[in-house]
Image (cartoon, rainbow, N blue to C red):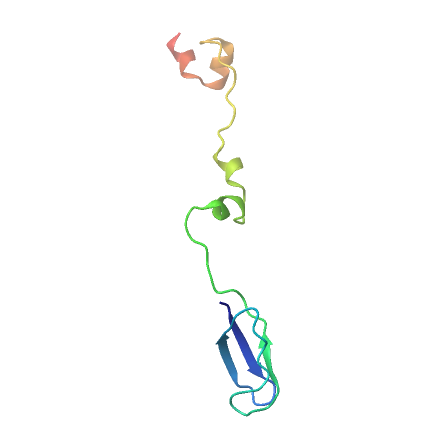
Length: 94
């Protein structure tokens, strides 16, 4: 069941109320009795933690696929000129 925040427009009394979504909204202030009790817009009170899909797919910043993929290597020709240009270990063995 969600928790709704209410505030009285007359006296300023604020209260959090645990209600079903199907319950009718409260209208009478419990402090002053005025019919000026209304729901307030609030942010949700939960935080997702861990390494689930939301962290990898919807987290802000750069995408993890572009930062974790290695750069494509130059074609190796087993110690030939392409290896020497790319700094390949096979070029130093020849």
